[in-house]
Amino acid sequence: MDFAKLMAEVNDFVWGPIMLAFLVGTGIFLTIRLKFLPWRNLPYAIKMILSKKSDAQGDISPFQSLMTALSATVGTGNIVGVSTAMVLGGPGALVWMWISAAFGLSTKYGESVLAVKYRKTNSVGEMAGGPMYAMKYGFGNKVIGRGLAALFAFFAVCASFGIGNMTQANSISSSFNAALGLDTTVIGVILTLCCLAVLVRGIRSIGAVSSVVVPAMAAFYFVVSVIVIVANAAALPAGIAEIFRMAFAPEAVAGGVGGSIIASMLSAMRWGVARGVFSNEAGLGSAPIAAAAAKTDHASRQGYVNMTGTFFDTMIICALTGLVIASSGMLGTIDPATGKAVSGANLTILAFSTVFGEAAKYIVSIALALFAFSTILGWEYYGEKALEYLVSKRSVLMGYRVLFSLIAFVGATQTLDFVWNFSDTMNGLMAIPNLLCLLVLNKDIAHECFEYQELVVEKEKKGEEVNLSHLSPTI
Image (cartoon, rainbow, N blue to C red; front, side, top):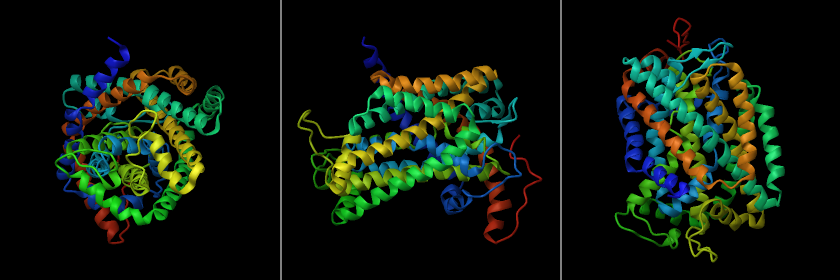
């Protein structure tokens, strides 16, 4: 059997209905278990992003931790994933992306809380944490805990080279090659040098760069997207109405903003949830690795901060892409060369071109490059920490940083169709032990949540001073 075809079939199984139900179901369970506090405290969580806990344990500020996590989640999924979901699942897929993200808030909160609670200090004084440490130290059955932890770490290392590196590098080189005609080898060399300059210095360097690049790229994309939405404002009400109509249509429908797109509620749900999870990574267990590095006085505080990553990623940036496409009238456009509906980055470019014309390809290329490069930085840290759990030698970890940077060159210069399915599969396999961990340790998450609500949130809302120096955010 063809290897690429086999990987595609395995990937379809891993990301099938059972996995999607497991992901969303865990989010629903945690939302109810935590008495909807992640939803109720979202404004508080956003306010906490810029809080400084310089005297607390950790390597980087809460803001830098969030930006590192966002650097990995805000990527090609926000541009390519949204347009693909709206073609394959209809415009209603956007609604299901939002629904999955709403419950993903609780999932992201819970996994980040566990990451801080069970983090450890490594041999060079840096924080090491994430689902693998929560499984190892939190499970009552140590054999199961260590086994699941090793599996998660292995899958995370594999995913870091694929979904976190080669596919992102390929997106950068492809977009610049198409828009500017730059040679992929030149792009690969530049990208590798940029990676080496940032990655060899570790998490503090990644955090510092991410805290500049992520807000800048988000602001750039926000501005150009709003310009398109405002310019096409006359078509926006009909576009939004079609989005919600097709999200809950029991039978296949088409028309209006959907153009030639035909989709049912089930297909909208499937593609919306799948691409939403791919974009914000809630439940995969990756973002908590960055949360564990934050300076914080309570696990729940950083849980709330990192939780906002799902809000910004899916409910803001993905929503912008969706509304740009919905208001442009380009959804359902048929490519004469293939006879199929235009999808992916090409659809996003078509949507932006309704306002920016030929400049649209440059705008989308720049956005894709920034989004993808930031993803490479964030995923290097995830992969390194997962590898550190398996092999603690510093020389191996430094070698990983260099190898990871060199692999970016391979991704930028080669067409690796099977890599996407392989890395997407590894990403999905990460979620299985992580979701089991969340369910098994749900009492720990609830304890941290309710304790923090009583000791901090309620008092801070009243304007009272709160001092948690007597508490330790780690075990």
